[in-house]
Image (cartoon, rainbow, N blue to C red; front, side, top):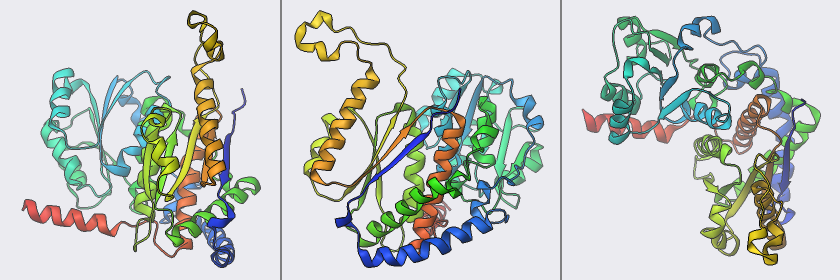
Length: 405
């Protein structure tokens, strides 16, 4: 069956756009876009992972011995784990294995893991680009899982004098190199996300199939309009928050990945959006009043799915007053609530974007990851910030280490 496409829409009114900035960004976009496109096949370039010529630092045949594990624990922080967690929840309905994600420091979670599982029968995937992430190292030590020539450990890090790589050499553990030119939040389509995806049973070839779709005519036009408008809004600093209003539970972890991408890439030099993941229709009953009648400092991204998996409701027991619910699915009800929200946004002239996921396929997920990475990188270039670094984060990491010495 042919994949149903992703629907992309923008409703950003002209009154929020500075015409002078628009002209400037229109001129800049073509240069930035063409440069990214022409450099796509150059290794050591952050967005090289979108290229068809991108090569993994692993062979799938080398992973065969790890496919027997039915429980897999992934240990990492930020971009080292958010992408694989997004993939797992996107496809959770068809993944037969149990995946656990350790993405924080939580004593209770460590204790529960030790009680629930025989750790020698669990596959542990330890991911840190630098190989020296304090939280990841701490979780590994708390679990006490490092054994010489262990058959249930995979370490992913750069190949240099960092604790992960040195440990792998010393203890003769299976190690996969993390490419040093790809930052964590952009790494999901590299070894960092594709290794766990392969072990989930997800088709990683299909995930990477649509990655350069955005360089073609239709997607390029939407990308151009979106990046120019968003750069304009970001530069004006009128809208300080992006609300990811999510009507599809399977997208929640993807939106936490998107949250990091937006915050770390664009939050620099006094600029940036505060991205917030909001669950709908639940938050209709707690935050909607503020969203619609509070400060006009919010831009909305509305996410939903174009598929219905639930049976039709029978409301006859409630009488004629609730006939409007009869023969409706839960997805139809959510869709009506979404449309009602959008109708109000339009009436109040509040800017929003809408993304409808046609189906939950590998191709569509790959397209979502790559589209937002490309859009974010171009916005950063348009407003003259580096979308690939994180100087403030590195400062806090250094200060933390000093306090622990």
